[in-house]
Amino acid sequence: MKIFIMRHGQAEDIAVTTKEQDAKRALTKLGEAQAASMSSLFSAAALSHIWVSPYLRAQQTYQQVRKGLDINNVDVTTNTDITPYGNASSLHDYLDAVQQSDNISALLIVSHMPLVSYLVDSFTAGQQSPLFQTAAVAELDYDVETMKGELVTMHLPTA
Image 1 (cartoon, rainbow, N blue to C red):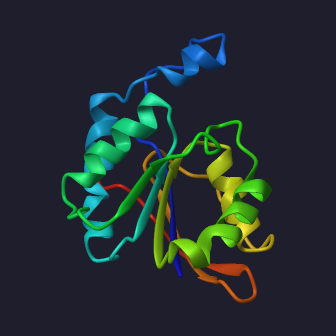
Image 2 (tube, rainbow, N blue to C red):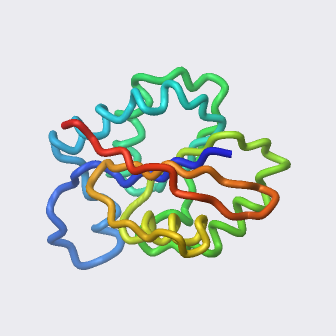
């Protein structure tokens, strides 16, 4: 299975004090352009599932990415477990539990730092824990039998 882990595009400054305020931070114009520039990466990926954080900047990133995609047969879910405060190990367990029943062949996860780095670490069994620039995507090959993956490459936005 292919797993694409994407950090949201550049967002407004983080001059917030609560999780509720953080959840409402929007993308900047640069963030929108960054996200849109990544759309072509997914057009050839034949995504079967997309999981998006409920935070505004992640939702806006997804909206920019989807403009270049045919998502008629893609299962798109807002997942409350993939916020900046999510647990990578729990999400890994969840993916392993639902993978067969949901027939996931290629998954895009749109989330936040630090979770995106922790997810790569969890899915690759500690092989990698990269830092993500905004709108960057980690591409993983994931073996559902062994429940371990390998980081193939990091894709960076062109904007």
